[in-house]
Length: 100
Image (cartoon, rainbow, N blue to C red; front, side, top):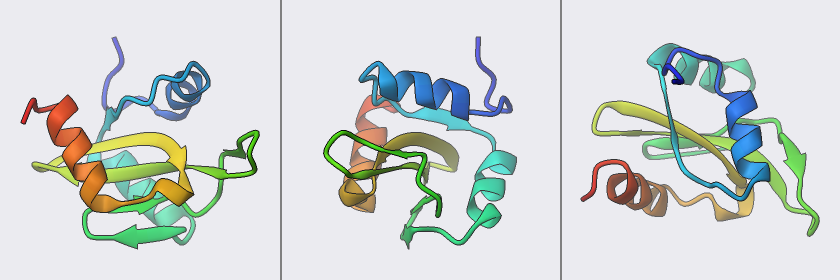
């Protein structure tokens, strides 16, 4: 079982490559590191996109690790930077993780 303290990228990369776009809970320490390692590509409300793209998809969109805080818990997943929308991200995490 994966711990929130485990480095998330191998799992995030594998999930994205398998078309699994679920959110992965991470620790506050990993969240803070990702926020501070390079300036965010996007930052708004309770979410940010890590400043460096992980890769580009077959349509040329940049794929970034996106992190958010929902109900005092920290989450991350890879997604197209073009789809960065903190309101939708929050609603998705609340629905899929918290069942709201």
